[in-house]
Length: 517
Image (cartoon, rainbow, N blue to C red):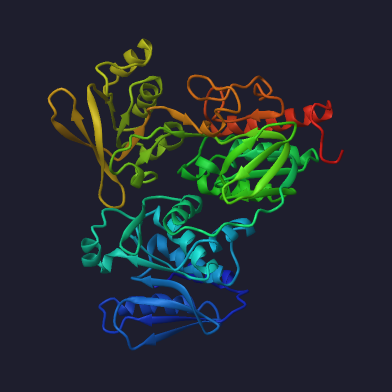
C-alpha cells in the first residue's frame, strides 16, 4: 500500500525510537478492514519497535499503545491522504521526538481543567485538518486527563449527519461544536481554556532581553537575526513562526529563490533563527505592554518579558469576505495574492472580488495568465484609478459585474468550483464557475494591540520613519503593519533587517542601555 520511497523515509524517521509501540486494531468484519490492516502493517514494517495487533472487535479504529500503556489518541477510519502525516507524528511525538511545544505552552496545557474529551471530524482531502488534529494530539499527550479522537468521515456518514457536521475540521467537545475550520495551537488552546477553564499558573520571573520582537514572519525573523548577529540578547514572541507566509501556496518572486512554498519558507526561517542564540516564544500572544525605559510584555498565560528595545512586526492579514466556504477553501482555490498564486491558475477561469486599485490591478495581471477573469464589485462603479479601469475594460477576457455581493464560495470537497453572488438591485443570485477566487478588498494591519502604544494612520498602519522608528523612543516597527508601501515578503525582510540595524545603532549611541551595562 505504501510506496518504497515512503517506507524508506519512515525507516529513517523511526530509526531512533526509544519506546515500543503496538497498533491495536478493532475492525473485525468491516469492509475496509483489510485496507486498515495493510496500511498499519506497512508502517510497522519500518521499525522493530512497532507491531500490529488485530483484536476481535468490530468497528474501524485503532489505538496506539506505548510500552504497555494506551495513549489518549484514537483513530477512527483510515488516516490516508493528508492525515497520514498525523499518524506518523503521533508515534514520533509520543516518543518525545519532532517539534514539541515549549515549557511555557506545556504548562498552559497542563493547567486546563479536565476531563477533556474531544472528537475531531476530518476528511483525508482536507489540507486544513492536519494542523488542528496534530495540535490536539500533542495536547492529549501532554495533559494528564485529555482524550482526542480523530474521525475520518468517509466511513461514518450517519454519525456526521446526526451531528449536523457541515464542514471539516469540526472539533466536538462532548455535544458542543468547539471549533470549525482552520486553526493553530494558539487559537485552539484559547478555546479550550474558555470552554473547560484552567488553573491559575504560578507567575514566573520575567525574562530580560536587550531587544524583543513581536511577530515571527519575514520581518520579525530578519530583525531577530540582525540583532542577534550584533550581539544583542534577542527574543521573538509569535503565535507562529512564519506568520501569514504559512498560508501562501507558491512563492516565485523571492529573489534568488526561483520557487518555494509558504510552509517551506516558514521552516527555513525557523531553521535560520535556530542558528543564533535567539529565544523563540512560539504560540504566544502579547496581551499588554507597559512602556517605560524598559518595556514589559505580558503574555497570555502569565509569562512576562522585559526589554530595552521593542520591534513590532506582526504583519497584516488579508481582509476576508466572511462568507460561507471562504475560510475553508483558503489554499484550495481562495487566494489573496495574485503575484504569488496567480501563475497556478494559468489558462483557467478566476474571479476577483474588489474594485479598488488592488482588485483592478489584480484582474489586469490575472487576465494575462488566466483564460478568463470576472471582477465583482459591491458598489455601482469601480473605485480604482481611471487609467486602470480603462485598461481592464479593454481586455477581451475580462468581465466586470457591478452592484453584486459575493454570498458563498462553492467547492467539490477538495477545491473551489465557483462563487455565488447576488445582484443588489434585483436580488437574483448567480453562480460563476471559477477555479480560483482572489479576494482583493484590502489588508488589515495587525496593529490593534498597539493602538494605545504608538501612532497609527487612518488605515491602522504604524507610522514609521526611514529607520523604522515609531513616535515612541525604543519602539520600532517593520513589515506589513507599517506605512511602508508594497506588502511583499522580500520588502518585509528588508524592513526587518533595517529595524534590527536601527536598534543596534541606538544601542551604540547610548540611546538604549543594554543589559550588559
